[in-house]
Length: 378
Image 1 (cartoon, rainbow, N blue to C red):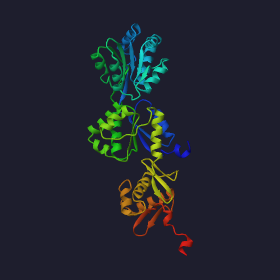
Image 2: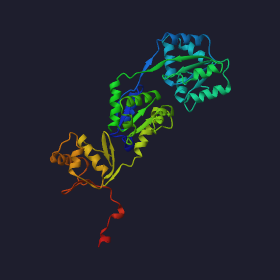
Image 3: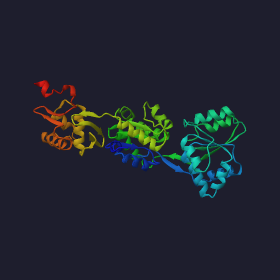
Image 4: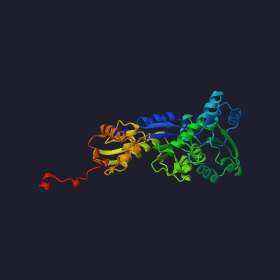
């Protein structure tokens, strides 16, 4: 991957709403120039010491089930880890090895493989509906089924299988809890509404639902949803469901993996044409700007003025408009002149022109068809 692609997220402010693997996601974004803001919408409540979990684990060992459904990779791994803490991991893996192992998606399959087992069937859609359709069509009457639940609950699988005659045991290793810092989540919602964020990422449906719920409770959901300059990104279709319900069209990678997720975001921004200027393509982000592949050294004031000029590329912007764009609300004409001078130093003196008695102009790209050669002008 070349350096341009590596740094394609330069200046891009990305909100991370996940608690788990947030550090890994932030590091991957930073390697591409991204700036992360972290506001976990939910917390994960582990149940490794829950006596009910251990009692049910011992029951599974004593009487191995016919079918085991792993709904999440993290949950299945946590179950094995909890069993290991209690000295039961070897016996549990042996018992699970006699059952038909069903994985609700590739992550769950990976966790099954990490335990030294093999999934007999994988729901590629990562939906509980696909799992239910398979098993109910085959028939579950009289079967012992163990379901390892994800943090949001059972998705109705317990009831469906019981109604069809199965004996169902549910295993809950973690649950979703309230955010550790509710104020931070609220601030992240307001930041999106105020135009401080380029992209918002979600890696779980409950977190997406919770984050949108905070926006609704704060009375700014409409302001959030109507921002057409925000990239909404979900790690997979299950995570995207609450966003679709809210009327958003999130970016979804081809595979539900963190690496694929980052690549999808990077590819999206790499494909953006930017503003065509006389010095090349200008890409403006909330945290910075890149001109023809060059990271511009800009102050917040410089970035605000450049954004204003870029919105009117090729046309004159008045000094009063420049003053209005500056943070702090200064009405001193000298402040506009200083801001423009500093911006020229960063961008290039030939790119930003002063139009006497009228204002300033960001020079747009020149169409070769409009250029008159010496011979043609002779």
